[in-house]
Image (cartoon, rainbow, N blue to C red; front, side, top):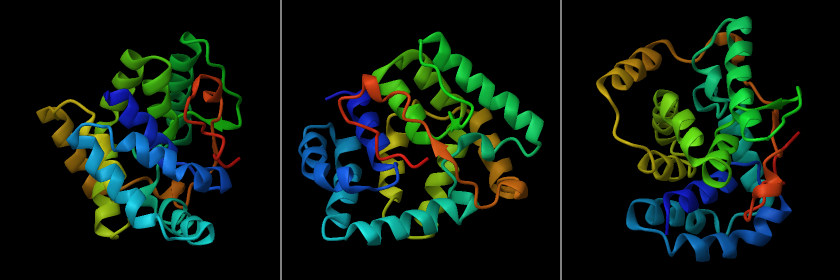
Length: 212
């Protein structure tokens, strides 16, 4: 199966867990088993590791990792834009990409959440979506490193996402090293916010588990 399918599953796994996710784990596992090896194994590792966990346990871990640890933030521009105005412009850039594909987001929705970008790439506009992912590969690599460092069971999901991306260029490697030294801007510690469900009408794997 395709990269888009792997991105679609990863998007579902990176949303805040809810009852719908719990009900669909078997479906996600069935689809993941049909993927090629670079994506199949890490996605199945996450699903198998969390299979016996309760919803409360999953939700608690999600909050502890993604909301309370700034180096694990899934909001991609929180890594790269410390100045509020600069980050605002970066978010507008994401929104314009979505708008060009006839996806309109509200001011309360943050378009740079990794799950949203993955769904956009998988289900709406693969070319522009994968360009967005490629442009933000350095933060994605650092999120993966941070998840491995904390021994989070979400780390394999990031492994699968990275496996869908083209090889890193020397420029991206240098950017990742610089970001690793500085870390995300302090003003975004514990950043959480509304994860867009604007793409849901296009989805075969629903993203309605996103928190608002």
